[in-house]
Length: 112
Length: 114
Image (cartoon, rainbow over the protein chains, first blue to last red):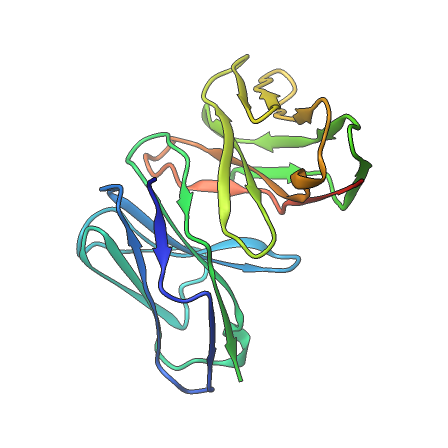
């Protein structure tokens, strides 16, 4: 069964910490995405990547960076975590073209 | 720009009732349309899609028809089950510009009672 795996389901970090969220897909998809999901705001795109070492800003990139050194892995980095980054983070991947996303199960991050 | 509007929830139904969740869209090009489902504590799963006008997507008893004339993609199921309780997201993917980045609706929560 094809899947997108996010390294943690729940994470608690302190304000100011550097936080790494990892995502791995086994479908050889070219495209990978990071979203955050907040009540009342829906899904918001943070960053995405079309290929290894490529990255593009989404709608809300401030306070985040990403890394894609291998095709199957896409990391989201919170350089200095803040309480307003408490959220559910969803990773997704997709083949190039008009295809649906495959999502991971999400990481619920709490910054205290 | 592109947008997706879904009916606000929660939608509350009894088991075996008929379900409709409305979705309308605006797009500059000729988008593909999707429905995703998110069960509690999980990520989203692709439920069905349609890539051109009058296409009908279907899966697990759910179906939706791409209506270009009304710019709609309403989700329907003839008889819901308690296990269908989840949040449903309508989305469009517009190839204009080549990015195919989807635009999501805000989601509609469905609660099914026994």
